Image (cartoon, rainbow, N blue to C red; front, side, top):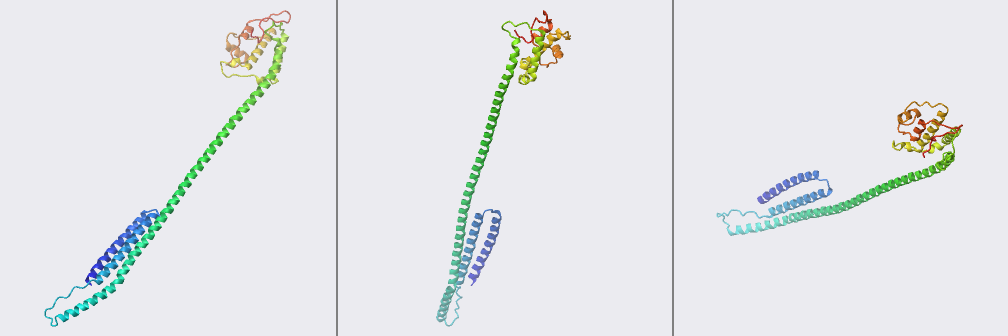
Length: 324
C-alpha cells in the first residue's frame, strides 16, 4: 500500500505538472500560430502526451496495488512455529492473487487509454495531412489563378497598346490623306487662277521685244491684276516668314509689281511725293507701308531714280515688274 501511495502520488504530480505546462504551451503556441496546420500538430502532440501519461498513471497504480507487502518481523517467542508460518504464507499467496486479479483491469485500461491516445493522435495526423493536401491544392489553384490573372492583364494591356497604335496609325494616315487631298485641291485651284493671270502678262514679255507700253496700258494692267487678286487669286499667293526668303514669296512679288505701277502712274500724274532716299530700304518700307522683313527689288529703285519719257502717251525706261 505504501508503494501504491508513493508511485501514485508521483505519477499524479507528474501528470498535473506536464498537463498544465502543456496546456499553457498549447495556448501560447495557438495564439502565435496563424495556420490550421500548425494548430493541428500541437493538438496531436498534446493529446498523445496526455493519453500516454494517463495510461502510465494507470499502469503505475496497478503495479503499486499488486506489489507484495513486506513480510512481518519474525517472532521467536511464537509457540506455534511452523504451523503459523505456513498459514501466513497461504494467506499471502491468496492476497497476492486477489491483488493481481484486481490490478489486471487497471493494466488493461491503461493500455486501452494509451492506445486510444495513439489512435486519436493518428487521426489528427491524418486530418493534418489531408489539411496539408487541401492547402497545397488551394495554393496551386491560387497560383494558377494569379498566373491567369497576370496573363489576362497582360493580354488586356497588349490589346490596349495595339488599339492605341492602330488609332495613332489611323490618325496619321487620315492627316496624311487630308494633306494630300488639300495639296491636290490647292494645286488645281492655283493653276486655274494662275492661268488667268498669265493671260494678262502677255503685255510684259521678255521675248520678243515688247511693244511700247502706254500710261493707259499700265493703268489697265494694274487694275486687271487688282481684280484678279480680289477675285480669289490672292488666296493662292504664297508667303514666307523667314526673313531671308520673305521677299521672294509670290505675294511680295505681286505687291512689288503694283508698287512699280504706282510709281510710274504717280510720276506721270505729277503725284509722286517720295522725299526719302531710294537706296535706303527703311525709307521705301515707310513710304509704301511694307513689312520690316521686306527688301525692295532693284527694279523699284530704278523706277524711282528715272523719270518716264515718252512721245504722246508711250513710256520709255524700265517697265514695272520686268526682271530682264
